[in-house]
Figure (cartoon, rainbow, N blue to C red):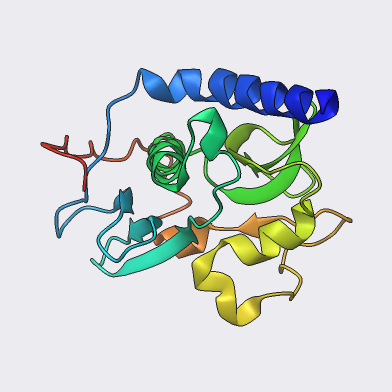
Length: 188
């Protein structure tokens, strides 16, 4: 009982600390036709983190179905919104190159790295205690569903690194700042 409460407190604290940087940022709406970006959609039932590439194609990235963190105030819709904002912030700041697994605040997380075998730099989201981080990484991205259980092309160590730069459809050699993202009038 005490262990379960401690786990809940640690999870809540870790999520709260990691979301402080997101809380002060603007919320992001669905991009216009000529823009690209991440946003959270609840229009089809379960919340989904979506990405619109520069050509206007919309792809699901993460489907939010777990209620594990709901008791801590992070239901699937809230997590979708926060993670979508993080991904968009990382994309705009050129910090979304590889997605991998690591540990932050003693908890397993899905995070970004800027190179293969690089350190876990930016939190994408926290995994529940006992959840297999590598299996979760392989299964989290909806656009990889045809590749579930298959190693990433950038797996030179025990920890996989999924290169998402090409998937973002942006010029990865151009280090210029991305154009501003439109501010929402309401949450999608």
